[in-house]
Image (cartoon, rainbow, N blue to C red; front, top):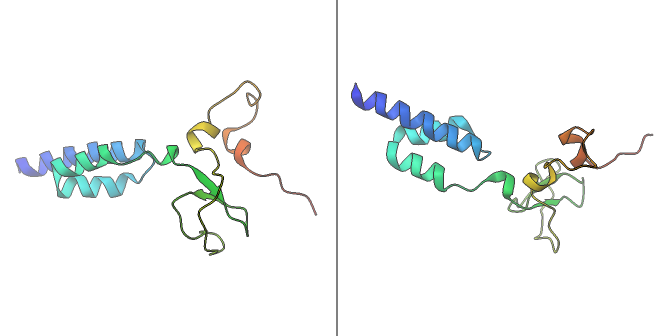
Length: 114
């Protein structure tokens, strides 16, 4: 019984750390629950997804992480770009010019009507 309590505590801690870093709470909960100490250490060592550089798909224009090999919208195979887009953590940081705009709207490309 004591092991289950400890495993649940490590699972919750690993899930919270994984969610803060931009990954799935459930995934890191299960990993940290299955192997308590090593799962939490793996969640702590995992990269921040919001700090990863991004790129735009040449076919459909979807912005994806730079390490993605295929576009998740249209299936286009993506080559490594010469110029990467700024990470989400830099794009969504509020600035004086964006004070009135919602955070999600600043990153979207404008679409023509018609």
